[in-house]
Image 1 (cartoon, rainbow, N blue to C red):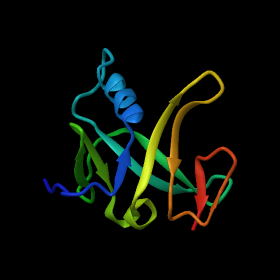
Image 2 (image 1 turned 60 degrees about the horizontal axis):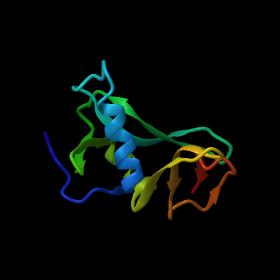
Image 3 (image 1 turned 30 degrees about the vertical axis):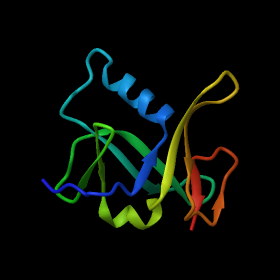
Image 4 (image 1 turned 180 degrees about the vertical axis):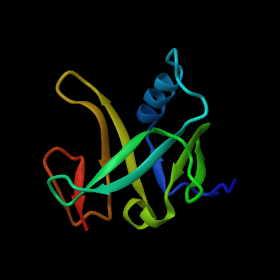
Length: 114
C-alpha cells in the first residue's frame, strides 16, 4: 500500500468536519476510502468525483487530517492544488471545488474544462 507524502488536494476545515461527520454515521463501511477524482461529462467537459469507495490497485493513498483518501494518479494533473470546501448554509449546501487548473468552470461549480 503506497502513501503519497504530500496530498495533491487540500480540504478546508469545514470539509474535513463534514467528511468526518459522514464517516461517523451509523453503518459507514470503515473499509472504504474517500475517492477524489474526475470523470468525463458535466456542463464544462469534466466533473468531479467525491465519495467513499474501495481502493483499486491503480490508486495512491494520502492522508488528510486522519482521512484516508485515494486518487488515481492518471487524474492528478486535473486535481493538483485543488481545494475542496463544504458550505452548509441555507442558500448553498454541499462540497465546492476550487481548481486552479480549470480553464473554464460552470455555474454549478461541479464541472470544469482544461
